[in-house]
Length: 499
Image (cartoon, rainbow, N blue to C red; front, side, top):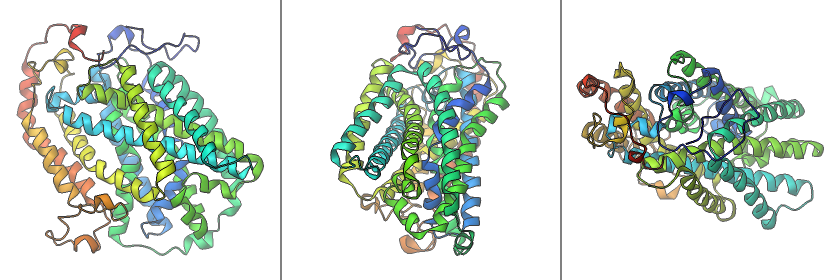
């Protein structure tokens, strides 16, 4: 095994991370909660945050409603990430290994598969957006924006993401620091250049929507930001010392992840509310449409900030998707799992870039569909963590016959039931393959698939609440039994697949 990255030294030689699912030893754990700011800020400073202003207004709500939905949804969802991140410093293992304490060692494979699907989906979306943004910029410069340009852009962007995922934690932490600085500065310049396109009279004239539409926008913000990261939130805090401040972990994770999306959302709302034409264009090309209001000389810097921001998020996703794939049962080294995910990411990006013309509809459908089971898992995980008074017995996280068991029925039943209920309370009419959802809206008196509650996406909130409250009410005895046993024998590395 290699030593853990020393975040205080920039001269350390880069090498492929040897750690997979294995526990990070005390001697290798370094840093402070403050260091969590860099990966979380770098992963969420993407120019895509501006486009969320258009997405929010698309729910038929006003500027002030969209702003409130964004602030509440973004901060609350990333606060959940902060709570999950505490498990990392308490258990020294990846997120989807730590949830074995709730689901059992092999019972946890089901949420691990869902987590893997979500992270692969996100890295695919971000890579496709970076590719389309690059092609749009080059087209505006007269350098060609056709198929050939998109192919080259996809190769370059894909290579950056895959290399980061394969190399692992050390490179990711350094890369995210650079991305944070570069994208932060260039984003401020972008805002200054296009500020004159804001017309408050048009923004303030956008009519208000209903309570149901407000809730729909709020849930979309939650799933588009923090709920897309909860299943990976402990993957980076696991390198912190055990005595690190839990409040510090929660605070720096939440602050680092939230601050950029909040600022970008405000400006995105102002831009989208000022121009119906721009608002419509963003739905088709969320990043490229933002170049239409830029002076030509800033197009190359814009491409840099757009691509770097999207790559920053995709790199964290491919790293965590590889870990989730190992937690689901694949027995290969971590870097091979990341490489396999990279191949799937490229294939998915090809479909988005070259074969579909309805990005926003498919994107919303993807987020809400997987947001339901991930919300259920998050509820179970948070309640299980809240019930624990002792740190995890790390060795037993890898032993089906240990204190955490092989397959725990209660959390699995809760997750499946919450998912079934949640899918019955969401609709995705823009994505034809999801028309089967929303089957509970009629029986529960919520107006059916065409009623006022059809687009509120209540299913995500319902799944989160059911998972949390069900575990809190029924899981206390199981947790107490687990914590009463004596410490287990030390872990043999041969007991850790993918280490």
